[in-house]
Amino acid sequence: MLLKLAWRNIWRNKRRTVITVVSIAFAVILSSVMRSMQLGSYERMIDNSVRFLTGYIQVHKKGYWDEQVIDNAFEPPPQLKEKIGAIENVEAAVPRLESFALASYQTQTKGAMIIGIDPEKESSLSGVEEKIVEGEIFDINDQQVLVGNGLADYLKLGIGDTIVLISQGYHGVNAAGKYPVSGLVKFGLPQLTNQVVFMPLPAAQYFFGADQLLTALAVVTDHPKHVGSIQSAIQQEVDTTELEVLNWKIMMPELIQGIEIDNISGIIMLLLLYVVIGFGMFGTFLMMTTERMYEFGVLLSVGMRRYKLQLVIFAEIIMLAMIAVLVGFALSLPVISYFYKHPITLPEEYKDAFEKFGIEPIYVFSLEPVVFTSQAWVVFFMALVLGSYPLYKIWKLDPVTAMKEGR
Image (cartoon, rainbow, N blue to C red):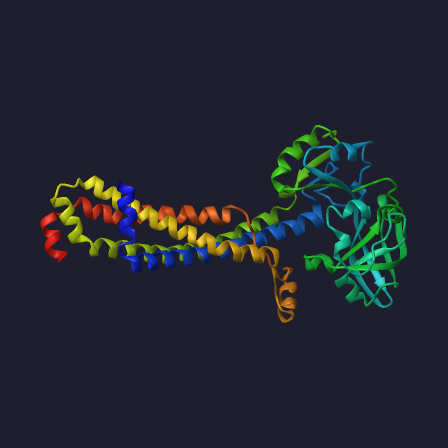
């Protein structure tokens, strides 16, 4: 009965209800879109970094992560890749041999990151084949390389040109070689596109004099939430006195710290938006209380209990908040879904400025449930807090005074 009365009271003044719902819903839309864009950027940043640099989990020789030199490469135990690949939620165990070299073409020279890969398995990690902007990928037994688009621009080389690589190999052996360029690749991390050279794994092992050796096995999973269970399962399959199993959060603490710092600024912006929402809600509750003083006085005079009147008003507040939140979700979900499938790419004039700071010039959105649930909880919390004002006024209300002042 009280809920039915509260519902009717809400729509007695349609203009006030519509204004309240629209103002709260608009704020919910803004906060949801802003939070979705922020979380989407973090997810894109993590995915780009993890899939290119380390994998979600990495198996390597003990001590390699503290001193990432090719002398700390290891020979994987027999069947290790197969055992890891058989673990639940593991997509692939991707072998890699990584080191650095001096890359040269004609008169141009620059330091480069050399990554020896199995092109078939690498597709599940970095998706290198999809990142090719010109040319084609090599086969596992080829003697060709893929060069980052930025590095190719700096060296002024193209498809079919021969890049010269000079480095120090395993245990100090001389490493030098000439390799035709089969394709150019471009990744979401500009600083990597500017220095990467992909090489077939057997060719990289021969180049560095590291036959059958790897610097790491990168493990790919379908979702980051499985990392903990997969890491525990892998540790049971390897000799932890010789090898170590690290997850991406341990290997890239600077990425986590950067996200946390940026997240603080986003939360501050959301708090300012919530303050605006709060003032709008409080103005509505204040107006709702002041306009109905005569009504409250009459109800108390004819014998209605104060707590029942308070329950009716509290139900009205909750209903208003629920309607506003649902309207906000209904309007924001299509917008976020569209930009989730079609990320915002910045115009060409802004790309160079973003790439100088190592930032991908694209805005990605997230559809994680927390984007919506967090807004709902905040709005309901504010409704509960601000709704205490009309409840307090009813508790202290004198019926005769209310009827006189409400006329």
